[in-house]
Length: 178
Length: 178
DNA sequence: CCTCGTTGTGTACGAGTGTACATACCGCCG
DNA sequence: CGGCGGTATGTACACTCGTACACAACGAGG
Image 1 (tube, chains in turn brown, red, blue, green):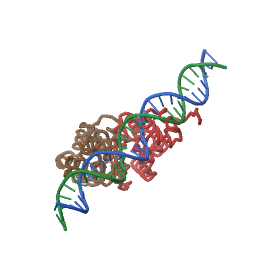
Image 2: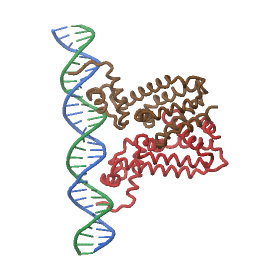
Image 3: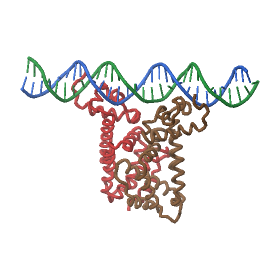
Image 4: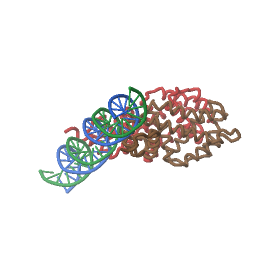
């Protein structure tokens, strides 16, 4: 029989779950679809993650950590010499022009917390990490508002299909900064 | 056999679908669950709505119309003598303190457009109706930004479980108004 | 060497799903 | 009055799903 002892299998299942959600959405997530994607037997996914919610939680956590890494790597956000509103607007533009399935993956996992209380602490941390970073360039209240406005602007672009308008975003964000 | 000719059946199916989504989410929406809720045979739901997406589209449209009616009825939003930011913040507070399943219903239908291009025109109109109303109190660009910020603030409260802070919301909204 | 408990696997079951389709009903037009 | 066509229904099929559970492999401790 195949590999009986496989450290890191749990992680590979999480990675597979993320790919499945990126491709087919949360609706397409099942023990079987993940098992096929990760190339492990069905029993393996149910063994490591008894319920689908466990798996979803792990996927959200992972995506949140990846996101935190991404923003930490974007040094211009922390550089006090840049125009914060312009920098944020440019960042959103890059993100929105990127791979659509990655965008949908991140937002869908994030929004899943609406119906699943178990995911809310992770979603809160996700938003909190960004707010904390922005708070170093301005005050905490403004940082929170900036995060909210960015969320709203991105959602508007994604949900209505209207193209993203970077000038508008920069202007609106700038108004929030005292 | 029961009622063969039933005008308004289509509408009753839509209403039932909305109740199902409110109770169990989009994930719980199926031809069968709607049929049971509407007390009609299975074939009736598949006859009026060949695919689930058709039904979802109709439900979103209906919810959007209800929403448009709600904001139209809230006269203070149009009254030029009120403080717009304070009025919006108070309105969000009332809404967020209301029935959670209704909140989840509206947001879940709205957010469903993320993965379903067919729903985007309806979502766009939903957001557009509110923006158009606000544009009569300020300019069009500011109105759009207000809608985005309100969306972001509501989502933050709903996704993180943090309680809604009306003072903060009023202050942030006021900053957007020139 | 031989148990024993943990880790991992395969299979089977019952429930629920979308869909297709033959059939039934009923108002209307000829 | 007769049948035609749109409306409505019930059933059946093929499929996917979560879950349970018996069993296989293996490392460790006796």
